[in-house]
Length: 107
Image (cartoon, rainbow, N blue to C red; front, side):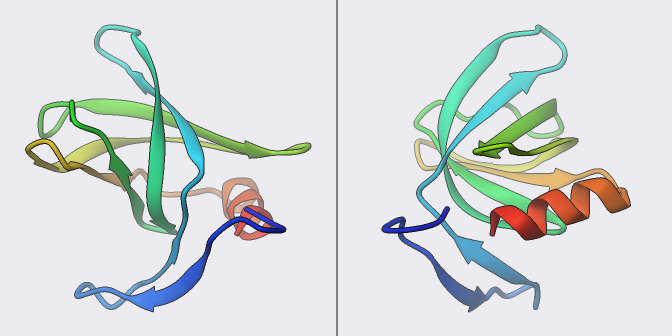
């Protein structure tokens, strides 16, 4: 998410600062073990939105992985909402200090 990569800070209706991004993120559906590569739309400490025409069902448990160079952010969460052919909102499980640090270094 560095260099020429597109990013901008914004406030959402939930009042959390989130980074707008066009990064690729790996999503693993925990129930099936299926791996997907999708585009990350935005991310913050509480969750992210992933652009996809095939969103997973609401409440599906997922693991996401985002990396840049040697920095890796990985966490689990659930699909908080799906928006038809637009994407899905992922609510992260509580982040530990290492995950917060990795996220800070990536954004």
